[in-house]
Length: 210
Ligand code: PCA
Image (tube, rainbow, N blue to C red; front, top):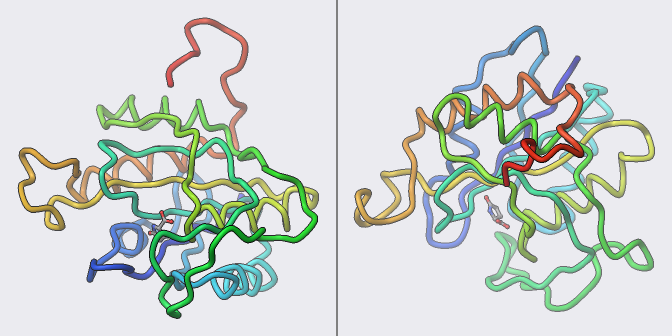
């Protein structure tokens, strides 16, 4: 299988984005899957246009988008994207969209089509903190997740979004503030990508891990 993995440029006050740093360190092949990596801008619609070009060029079987969520303790696999742009800060083009739909007239939300429970389990099996998240926010990460699911779900391309915490080098006090080392994140994301084309865990009590 071919997996397109995306990361973001830095945004806001940060000069580095762990999602982009992870991309640089991921191998070209993981458990037989070919990994195609692209960094996308933190800009509404332009981010989606970059993904569209990459999908046309590489024809991936799945799309896994990565982004930074400062304040979160672990790697969080997103369940759902909503059809709302409501940016708390301007994007990197200086535009701050407020209460607008991402795609006019399209459904209110899309669920990830990745095996999110299986992915969380795979990360935890490496001893790395991970959980399901029920909100990708209303900024560019949610925008990208929604746009990708809207564009590609019907074509049978699996897609979803995963947030990573701030890196230890980005926070004031790594012992107190929520963060992770880049090495831990890379190990977790690598373990997670192994299972992206597996079936999800459904309908059994012991499968409830989030
Ligand atoms: N995180 C932002 C956008 C880019 C990124 O890495 C978000 O959570 O929306």
